[in-house]
Amino acid sequence: MKLFRKIQKWFENQENLYYLFLIILIVPNIVLCFTEPMPLVAKVCNVLLPFSIYHMIMSWSGNCGKTFWLLFPFLFFGAFQIVLLYLFGQSVIAVDMFLNLVTTNPGEALELLDNLIPAIIIVVLLYIPALVLAAVTVSKKRRLSETFVRRERKRARITVIAGILSLVAAYLFDARYELKSDLYPANVCYNIALAFQRTAQTQHYAETSKDFTFQAKTTRPEKNREVYVMVIGETSRAANWSIYGYNRNTNPELTKIKGLTAFSHVLTESNTTHKSVPMLMSSVTAHDFNSIYRQKGIITAFKEAGYRTAFFSNQRYNHSFIDFFGKEADICDFIKEDTGDGSYNPSDDELLKLVAAELAENASKQFIVLHTYGSHFNYRERYPADNAFFLPDFPVDAELKYKDNLINAYDNSIRYTDNFLARLIRMLQEQDIDTAMLYTSDHGEDIFDDDRHLFLHASPVPSYYQIHVPFLVWMSDNYRKNYPDLFKNAEINRQKNISSSASFFQTMLELGGIDTPCRNDSLSVINASYTEKNRVYLNDHNEARSLNDIGMREEDFTMLQMKGIVYR
Image 1 (spheres, rainbow, N blue to C red):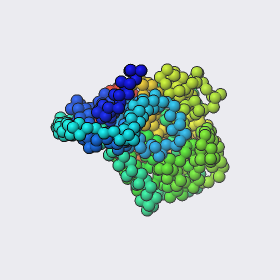
Image 2: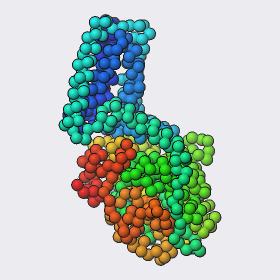
Image 3: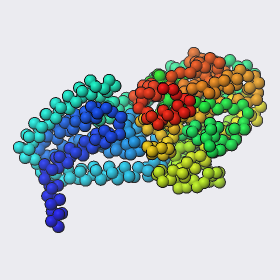
Image 4: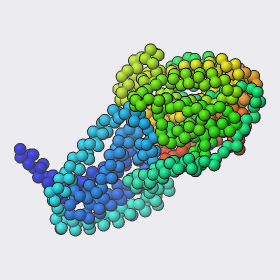
């Protein structure tokens, strides 16, 4: 009982609460010192300057509870930051994290929620009791003494001066230091502003892109029937494809198909779906991503050239460019939206039924784009139970102790993709016409692959497993006969370094014989003039950065070097 009274008395002491609130406010900054690869002087600044500002604000009022509640937005950022660090291990809240809130469907969010429970518990224990104590202080009108407030204001001024000096030192001793990128929570506030800006630009896309035209035309004979299919996969990493040397047989069918070229050294320029897929569907790359607000997608190019077009997706609306580009098609179907049931989880097989119906239209020129659900977590739900090959594949909770089960389920989803693509190819081959298929995935995935224990994708700093993706070109017998040089060029280029984000669109244009001023044959992997480019990544501020400059860890560069993808 005495101990309880002592604790109660301690929490009723407003001076104690004042310091407690200050400590809670600065917790994310302290944690970031251990997770971020910053020099010591930048870490000192990252703690000292924000602490001094919090200190100054807290000293403005004699009621520390009221001031603490006024700082609630920063408490929210802190909670979000801790959850992010739990999930990805490093980096501040990115612009993409905010945009994911509006582009990720509720089903995907619920699949991930269970795996964040430990982080949510930490956040609740850290912030909720403090907010309750602050509310009690406000309701009971408890106040700090004038003497204490005057003293803390003087201390706050001194710490602000020290914080400013630490900021100057950070700029002097770290040539790459940027306040908007490296100082928490200033960087979060900057990222929020960017997120609002991008959201506004996205909402005005119809207006800013309305006059865009590819000036596209076909270079192929009008009398020939042609069908071309672009397949955009989901969360499929090349590391688990046996066609690229993986020690499990995850591609039993594709390895037997004639006319298929698998490109080995392919990296995506983004590990987020809402950026990667629009780059695959347009001429936009990491070097000019912000031009996306003024452009249209590849479907429009084929439409302008006289093709009947279709877009079939096994994903929900994301209220952004995937939707915009998909709806350019003559026929558009997001099959998950076909019912009002949010739990509706159709198989990618349903896409093949739509392809069969579209082929039955027997149009002379057809272009079909498929957006699959591929290997998106929860992996166990991406394939029929009787197709499970690697066992056990359950449970697949996102915990390190279930890593073997997760890998089994993930590999089963890759085998399912293998079967899906093989059946699609057979459907096209049976048409006995000029036809071709192009496939890649938007990004890869981490599955507790090393001692960092990273899981999923879209981390602010990508890993090797998130950016090394499969990239396939298949050409039918007729197509190879009529355009032998294109198949020859594909075989010549298959071991070269390729950016899927830059080459997917350009390769599809050449496969379909589409001529447009936007076409760049030096980026087409089926062209003799294909030229390897420096490897870049689209950072959170939509800037193209070399892989050396985005904070990738040595483990990831080692993997890329082992695969012959990058050289340092």
